Image (cartoon, rainbow, N blue to C red; front, side, top):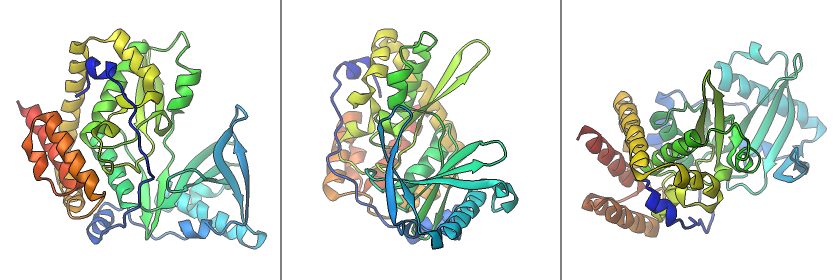
Length: 354
């Protein structure tokens, strides 16, 4: 699906408007209950929106991080912090509150430019100053489908909870893609060929399951030193654009200009045959994951094909572009985004069996 020819014909994949949120259907709610993702939590997104003041949060380089730290009235602050620690215990330890005995809420931030205006909670262990984060957001069906597809089809496990209209997500650790490109790529110890290979695999994963908007701000790079080499894994951290946009290129990270420095490594270091080899490897891995979780995936896709997750014009355009790209008329029969995702995964399985 990814080739050096398409690398060289790069264009910027533009998302012009923010995606509208979609409600959680009864089918999806039942799926979440079955998978033990549905929990009753003591604090909601709307509760956190009752903060009464905020100030700009700067990153370690002195730049505006696009997050603001929020403050609550003194009469509510203790109650909010206690509830957040309880949520953390449910997320991390299935409600065992003993894990939060020495923890405190150090900071509550809101991303003022985010599509969903998420809250980020910083939890600190007062004994050793170790810290962790988690996120509280408005629940959006598209994002939940994106999280579940990532959990099932990628090599990454995703930890999240849903409570009514509130979504709680575990922090995904790694170096933000934009910071990696700016501060790490020029280092002599970067294994360029392994990084380029991982980008090809990442591109394959996002396109097959139609996860859009994977420019460098929306993924992190996890670096794992080995006894001989360094391994890289690119992990998506934003799932708002799961099967919403109508342009095929939005689902292929190779078309975002923010990713150009990594893309150029592929052009420099890999032949078309090498790229195809890495594509086939990832396709085979995805097919294995589908087979291992076939019943869970079927239940998820069944819910996905029953609801509206995009605009009618997006669905018409994407199924046409996918049909032309694959030279397969089955996409034209799809009635919604869930059916387009289902057809894409079915084609991958058929190709893997050949």
